[in-house]
Length: 82
Image (spheres, rainbow, N blue to C red):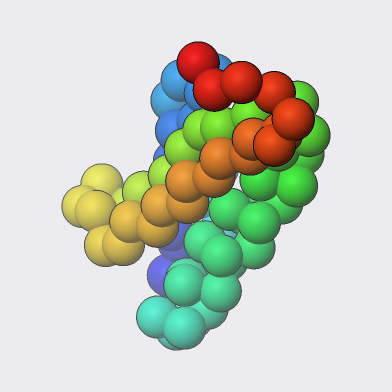
């Protein structure tokens, strides 16, 4: 099992993960990225009409191993577009 760090970038800017977590498989890393993206989208989507979230995963040496991105947009149909 190795330690990986999940750095977040969203509308508030970058947040570096200094603690990391132990993950044993590539699938586990991908699953954690998906969970983080979904959790943040659930929290931010009601407050922001659009945005993007990305997670860059680093290994213990600081090398990037995976990047996951999610973009979202909402628009009320009864309001004019800007």
